[in-house]
Length: 401
Image (cartoon, rainbow, N blue to C red; front, top):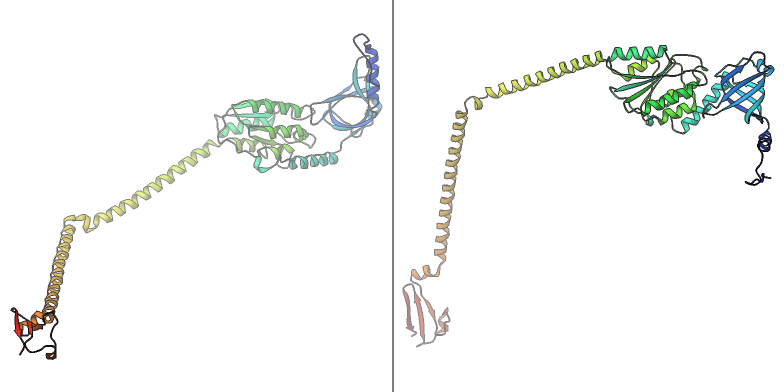
């Protein structure tokens, strides 16, 4: 039943504390997995205190265990180790604090650790965090390079020296963080977000030298992997050696095998670029000279032609051709006209030969009756009948006898 309280009937602190302790006690003993962020063993005390941190979220709990339980752990654990703890929650009423009393602590072995990393890898891959289409290209010449590394580490020296040897004007913004241990992942995430928020930073490099699987464990932290995936700035991962493959290598936009390789990838080599420019200039000069030589040869060949050497000669030849064509045109037209005239005369002669007037001119006459009927047969007329005679010279009347 919930506790019934009111402003007139408040519950005392001791009652609330006792109820909280009872509610927490109902949880019972549970198995908890985490990373030891802090380990305290005070001389002369029979209790060891642990700060157990969640590997993904920024959450930690306080765990206490008898020294006899802690001393029998094999192999011994230190800060940064992954462990599984069997503990019961306890609410300490006088101070109002929550602690877990451990009865068993078991370190996570390398084989089990690798198996858990493989499961996490498959989970993140299924979400698409390692997809190639998410990778962004690096800028050719970054304005400022963000570098996350250990303080005074060999990785920092390799990246800075090799990058400046390739391009002396390159600028860096260095964030020194812990690169192993329980606090490494959180510090790297914070540094990553600070550099990503800086508008001058064009590329971010995560650099660390080689180490064991446990040493490189912070760079497989799920929170760090998701932070890299959320970055707007391209990220280069240079963690460990070639054979090392933490999860941040898979989510980063570019994976470098070593910090030295990262320096080679983020900035161009000025000597190589100058040599490349000189080579391109020489190739361009050679191509231009070849082109000009070819065009000069063509021009000289054109100048050697008669048409260009003596243009008047070609014009004269063309004038003669035009005159010849004009003369041929005149002759052809005259012949056509002559043939047309002969044909016209021939047709006219035929027309005249076939004309009735030509027949009349030869002495013939055409006789018609009074009503205009042409006389073809003597039987058509009678004696004394008046006929009209048409001859070549005119018309006159005749009487039939």
